[in-house]
Image: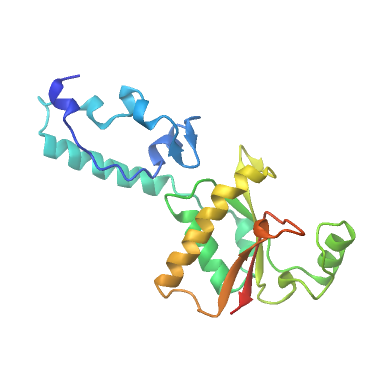
Length: 210
């Protein structure tokens, strides 16, 4: 490592793509948990060789590599999630798709429920997994005014509350941004079941009329 390499200043936007690519266990909520003390190999200046290129050329190459990696590491819905999501209101479709594909999305997630049939809704109520019978749930309309989403961690759905909270914060922030950009219908407020007191429902998101 040359002294000049340590002088490199690179404006990392902390998307987490490089950490995702190597499945780094120190990536927590899409952020490096040891960033100030990260090893040399995780620092932009580590591979810089002033005999091969200028600082400007190196930083430009690094930027291009970051953008390529960022695009490659973006999450995408599988067919199961897409099938469920397509039964939902367009605002929910845009919200969940935008949230998942954002580089800052803290975790992969799946859409487990969109529209629910009469049989499905009544089954969930009988099992104690819903307080409502058909047709009183936001899931019972077409398009559905509710979607259930769950973190997908190590190849399976997580039911741990702590895994939902960073995702919920990200989905809320995405909703706010889409509203400011005028990309939503403007007719609804977004509600998260994890904020409810009497019946906490961590996967549940619904639209209420303003």
